[in-house]
Image 1 (tube, rainbow, N blue to C red):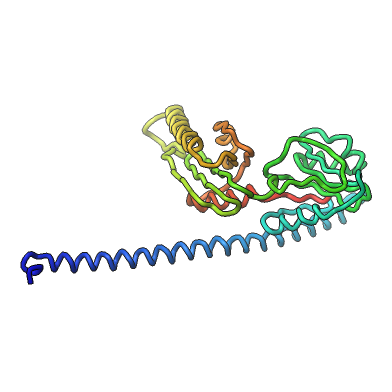
Image 2 (image 1 turned 180 degrees about the vertical axis):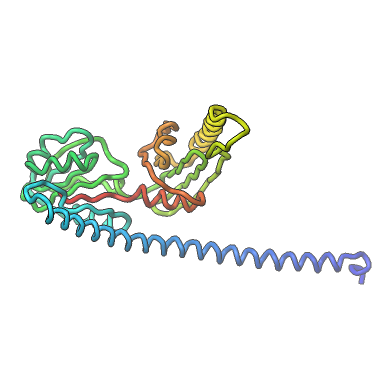
Amino acid sequence: MLDELLGRAALKDRIDELAAEKESLETRLEAESDRRADAVSARQDAEERVNRLEDRVTELEDRVERAGGDEGGLDFRGVGQVRGDRLAEVLSRLDSVDTDAEGALTAMVDHEVPDAVHEALDDRATLVDRAAPCLVCADDAGLVSVALDPPLAPEPFASWGDGFRLDREWFLPTGEFSLALVRADLFALGEYDGRERVATRTFESDVKSQHSKGGFSQARFERLRDEQIADHLDRCRAALADRDADRLVLAGDRRVVDELDADAAATAAVDATGDPEDALDKAFYDVWTTTLVRL
């Protein structure tokens, strides 16, 4: 009775309505998050299947080309893209190779093909020069001869041993690291623990994309655009400096990536467009994709 006289009853009813609405929104948000996680998982599976089909198509096209060309010429026996579970399986197979003390050669080749690779592959060493930079695995019996391009490539080396020298951190997302996607008008930073993104920071900047007729000259437009990009890159540098993980992978527009000059463990040119978080997901899969060449 007192609540009605003081007008508190209506307020309490309104509070109950808002609480119910809040609970409904929280339920919808949780469901949306679950759907997003399922969508990401489905996308990963689909991309793995697409990769396998692309590998098969590339292999068949390579066979057709070699069958119709000069049989005496040297060419790759096959080229494919591998990542995720498929890449882990390939690495496990290479890890399983067991030879005598000097039967397996591993070489990270950057610009110059080392003598050890020429020794192991003979005339097919010229193919390594075409595939470089790459990590070469070859055995002295000629049973294995492949080249891979690790996303986090080590310094050049060449060594013989009783097995191949492979560090999974060169190829797969392991441990804690940051991946930043940078374009002239977009920034997306993901903090990762292995494949799982645990934190995200994104922003977009207003950068003029094209000069409209009238108003001001082309020179003034370009000067204004350069200033906008410079301001955007300053924001990117500040965000990168504030990241959690020490290890950084920097991806995006090559010119922008080079201009940032960040202390990155690796850089990659990727064409990831769209919504910042979707673009970041695309960049993640592009970065952690390895080209596998059969020499």
